[in-house]
Amino acid sequence: VPEHRMPKEAIIKQIADVKRGIEVYTNAVIGSTVFVEELAREFDAVIVATGANKPAFPGIPGESYHGVFSANDILLGVDHGAPCMTAVVGSTESALDTSIILAKSGNQVTLVTQKDSPEISPNKKLVDMAVRAGVQFMVLTEPVAIKGDDKYSVKGIELRQLMLGDEDFDGKRLVLPLEDSEFVMECNKVVLGTGHDPNPSIGMYSTLRTIGKNKIWTNPHSQTTIENVFAAGEMGIG
Image (cartoon, rainbow, N blue to C red; front, side):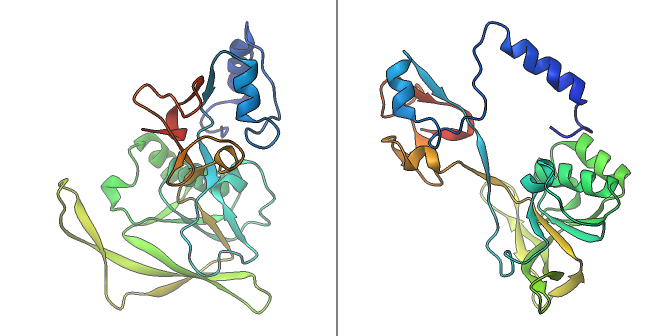
């Protein structure tokens, strides 16, 4: 949790409160260091609620260049180099948090989002914090490719402008590409904050039935294909 959201002292206190009367095992990765079937044999009931924490990249050319990071990298304190012109792609809360952290550390940050200004994020407080930190917003814009130099380091990002079209069946206006609107924005750092998927190792190393992007199948009672194992939150689908 970033410092601008909650002071570390408050987080430490919350963790201490959780530990009262509960046995906590740290540094455990479900499906890697601890396996679902083992837990199911040891406990009467198991709830898998590990959330979605694997970065989901948009799949554009240049994602492997030096200077490309996931929002998770920045949030976890990975060394991202000296302050520079930085493009953050996405309007997730992780993208906004990342933008604030980078702006406060001296980077010139532009957040690129496919959304229109009023719909950047339902978390208006976080958007306001980003504005106060000096983050610039480039709305109705999508990434096309990350540009690199002969040393495979980021030197810019190719973008495409979008426009609002007619409403769909849900009453939301469609977002359409604007013809011949591509342009390149110079930058030396690109952070991709376009979303997250569940950890694939849980489904890969268990007999649980999975659906789509590594989500665990459940019945209407959140029960998985293992009788005493349940999935909740972003992990479960049923």
